Length: 109
Image (cartoon, rainbow, N blue to C red; front, side, top):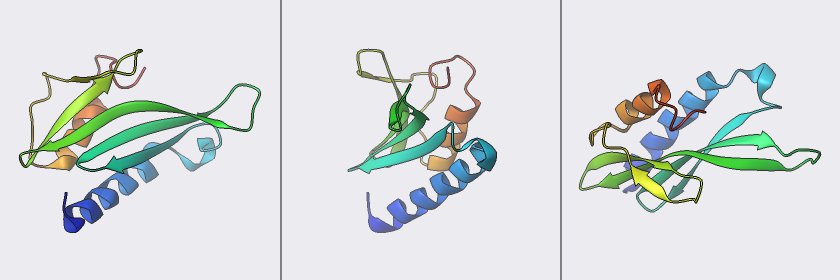
């Protein structure tokens, strides 16, 4: 992923996070992301039980493969699986919106 694409993706995700989680609940839930190579992982963070630490839960992973973004979900054994219902797409923002609007429960519990 080139620097221009990375900057654009960061801006898209930062805007998404800003609108997705209302400010008044950010002490209870946060969204974040990690970029590693051509992969972007959307992460939900919640306070740990009886601790001041935060627990990270991977929501979805976007992988740039031959100029198209593929979407993956993570199972309880921490293995990533390709989401066949979401076809590869050149536009990252479209894929992020598909994950956000997904109703089959694999991303948002």
